[in-house]
Length: 97
Image (cartoon, rainbow, N blue to C red; front, side, top):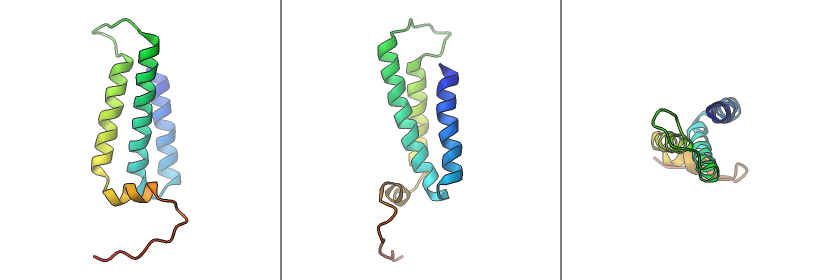
């Protein structure tokens, strides 16, 4: 399960690095991690695996994805997130310093 979530994180992250503009990578990575955290929570609720202190559970993965997603969102600037969420074809007014 850990390998699956690692691949589901690494492949889109590498694609985002190559396909998106540099200022859009952190917001996209943040959204990706929040979505993966939601999938990990859904899988943890459906599987009801036994809890063991020695094993990494899906709940641990969901918490890790959320923590790293929050860190990526904090490190990115708000206008970068707005640029990521805005449509790419819309003309933007020139910003004034």
